[in-house]
Image (cartoon, rainbow, N blue to C red; front, side):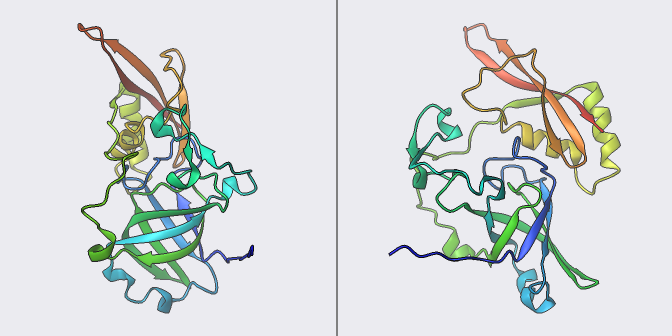
Length: 243
């Protein structure tokens, strides 16, 4: 018998990622990526987070709010497989699901309780700005860390691309560093080394890619270098961080 349930958002994420494109495909891949999780009334009470400061990481259950209402399919094309092969939706973490629910483990840096607001500062995120949170649970190392766990589809960390910054991008990083309490250069490197473009897309060095990050537009291009043995190496050149 089919059942229907409804949940209230307990909080909202204010993220450094302002759009879907460029967001790390898994949490923890960009440790410098940060956000503030603001609890909403009536859940924004100091009692609701009592004891949570003793936890280093938390599980967040959230809504893929930009995918609400999109038709789901029993199979999807995961980026890890190049976007050309299909797998069952329940064998992946695709945001297009029967119920648009997501699950991420993130680092809890600190908790601020000021003027009736409860703010959880988190990092290593894969959440876009405005993401509704429906639950928070503490990460429990002795049960959540399973050393013998395996996943034939995703058995290792994807190889990072080489990322280099132009002189203009280096200067821009220094400029924006005065506006944000984090390492802007490290954030840019960590985000881009994951290769944000679709896996099936052939890199074109003449094309300039861009994404909204914090309060600037990050621009880059792909470079393909041919090696002596006939192999080619893909890398990224960061062009600029624009206001």
